Image 1 (cartoon, chains in turn brown, orange):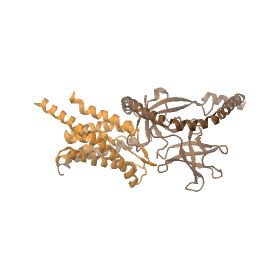
Image 2 (cartoon, each protein chain N blue to C red; image 1 turned 120 degrees about the horizontal axis):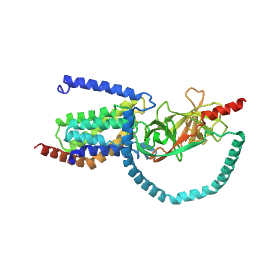
Image 3 (spheres, one colour; image 1 turned 180 degrees about the vertical axis):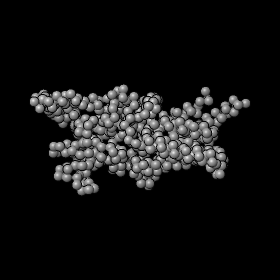
Image 4 (cartoon, rainbow over the protein chains, first blue to last red; image 1 turned 180 degrees about the horizontal axis):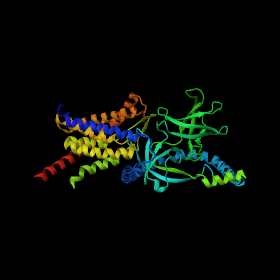
Length: 293
Length: 174
C-alpha cells in the first residue's frame, strides 16, 4: 500500500483528478456546438458504427418478420374490421384537405406550421449505458440536419436533435430526465386551443408529463396530444401520445396530464427528422406590409 | 498479425456494445430490465490480469475517450474509469492466484463496482433520480447476469488469445 501512494504517484493521481473535474465540468455545460476534435471523433466512430449496426438491424428485421408472420391471422381480423371505417375516414380527409387548400388560397396563406421535409435516417447506435436517453443517427449537417429538429417514427414523436456533426446527429429522446427538455404541445379532440408543455418523464409509469394546462379547461382521458409548432422548430401536428390521467400540478394552479407516448422507444431503427419549412423572413415582412397598407 | 490482435478485439467489442444496447430495455411482465453490455471493460480487465496492466490502461484511456465523446458527451468519465478499473485489477491480481475462475470473478466484481460508480456519478449530477433498490433490481442484476453469461462463454477465448500474444511477445524477445 505504501508503494501505491508514493509521492510521484500521488501527485499524478491528484493531477488526474483535477483534470477530470475540469473536463467534466467543461462538457456538462449546455453546449450548442461541438468542438472540432469531437466532431472528428464522432464522425469517425459513427462511420465504423454504421458497419456494425447494418447487420444488426438485418437480424432484428428477420426476427420482426417472423414475429409478424405469426401474428398475421389475428392482425388480419383486426384490420378487416378497421377497413370499412378507414374508407369513410379517407374520403372525409380528402374532402377536408381540398377544402383546406381552397380556403388557404382564398386567404393567401402559403406557409404552414405543419409543412416539413422529412429526412430519413437510421439509428446507428444507442448509448449503451442507457443512463441518458440518447440515440445516434447516420445523418448530419451535410444532409441538412440542424439542432433542435424534431425526430419521429411512423407512430409518433421520439425526441429532438441535440448535437450535429457533419455525418452524425445525436438525438435526445423525450423519455429523458433532463429538466430543460420541453416540447410545446396541444391537446386535440376537445375544445380548440388547449396548449401545454411536455415537461419531464415519469420513469415508473413510463409516461410523459404535460404541464401548464389552464385549470378551467376540462380534459378527458384518451384525448390525443400533438406538437403545437409554437415552440419554433418543431412542425405542428406530430403525434406525441394519449392522455391517461389528469391531475392538478404541485402548486394547484394548473393542470397536469400524464401522456402515454405513441411511439415505442425500444428497438428504434428507421426514424424521420422533420426539417420544418419555416416561413422565410422576406415572406413574413411582405405579409405584414400588405396588412399595413 | 497477432501483434495487433488485442486492440482489434477491443475495437470490435467497442462497436458491438451499442448494437446489443439496441435491444435493451427488455420488457418482462410489465417491468423493464436494463441490460448494459460491458464487453470492452471485461476484456480490458482480462488483459490487465493476464497480460499487462499498463497496456490495459492505455487501451482503456483510448476507448474511454471515444466512448465519452461519441455517446455521453461528458468527457473524462469513462476515460478515467476504464484505466482506474484496470489499475485496480492489476494490483489485486498480484496478490492472488491467477486462474480463469479468479479472473472471471474479479472481472464481474469490478464490473459491478463500475456500474455502481456510474450510478453514483449520474445521481450526483442529478441526471437520474432512481432509488438504490430499483437500481439494484432493474439495472445491476440483469446487467450482471447478462455480462456473466457473456464472460462464461468467451472468457476462455479471451484468455487463450491473450496467452498467444504473450507467447509471441516472449518469442520475439529471444
